[in-house]
Amino acid sequence: MRPVVPYVTAALLFGLGVYGVLRRRNAVLVLMAVELMLNAVNLVLVTTDTTVRATLPHGGQVFALFVIVLAAAEIGVGLAIVLQLYRLRATVAVDAIPLAGADGSPAPADPEPTTAGADEVVQA
Image (cartoon, rainbow, N blue to C red):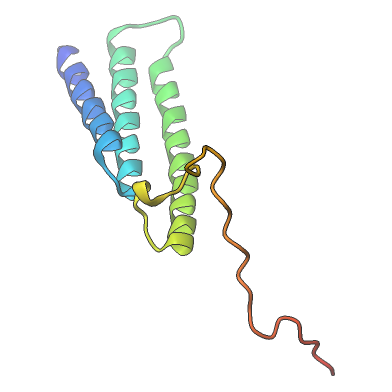
């Protein structure tokens, strides 16, 4: 097989992922676009491993395995952040996240939620 086809496919996947990161407003879709970019890198690594025999045997496949592990960790942490964002703001829109105030100061933190009856002491 000619190595041009996987390289062009990887470039298209990576370009689609960059477009998704730059244009999407939904945090879950941004994470999916990042996954597309990581899969494009995996395709390049495996294609390079099969076409160019470097000093490290199957080095591209080993690096691709590391990228898959990092992608799994990224999804775990990213989805945890998205779920916490949804709990706090009731939206997963990336544009709705306040990063800084108008004067450049950090955004004020939300006060801790209070529960009714938290100050009462239970007597046995």
